[in-house]
Image 1 (cartoon, one colour):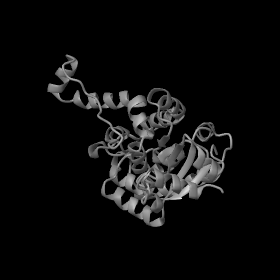
Image 2 (cartoon, rainbow, N blue to C red; image 1 turned 60 degrees about the vertical axis):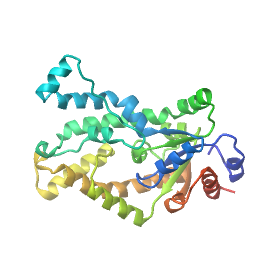
Image 3 (cartoon, rainbow, N blue to C red; image 1 turned 90 degrees about the vertical axis):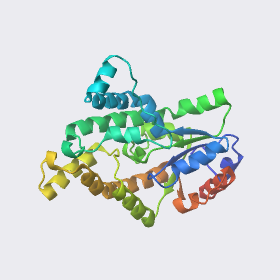
Image 4 (cartoon, helix red, strand yellow; image 1 turned 60 degrees about the horizontal axis):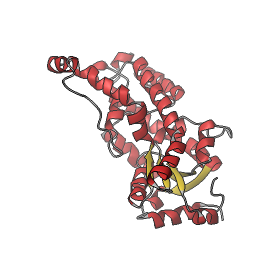
Length: 284
């Protein structure tokens, strides 16, 4: 770790931290709080949706708009512009583009098209994570900000091998930032599942996991691909995805960083609280 001990962390003039864990446990909450306290906030999902998938997202808007005669005519004349208004707190354009597999009549994508978009996301996430070093330099050189927090998406564990000591992404990230897992409890997991059930949204999954679940779901229900209800499939998959991710997060923390509890993160109110919380989790 770049801060081997508690004393190293507390004495560091520039603190560089990467937060990872399930979505909904406080990564963005803490990152926003630190940004308001003078830290540089680098959002992986925002970088994905703007730098690496912004054109895919805009083209998808145009594809849908071309189905409407009035908008088609205006687009062909370059009379209107369609773009995403993605933000740190609203990633809906990215989620909408990723989509869900299943019946086109119910808003689903053919599974092959869905996997193309999943693979686009994987490449984008990999590059966005590796861009962290550039943004650490950028924050210092342009803005004079030394403290840096990297706010990762929940799918970081899907694009790395936490048990490989030579994993290129984790090697690069851990050489520049302290890796911090925000660990949720069983109660947190149950609440995330309930929240997802109320409003299912697209997610990125490891290809092998997703392909296996796509077959299992259809065999279990005796459905053809075009008969799958997209929302039902992602609901069915979500809880299993959390279980699939948990040991991967644990290995990331065990091999590459430290762990803090989500309930403790919820009590953090300022950068002093955050610094103390991290210090408590560090080796003496």
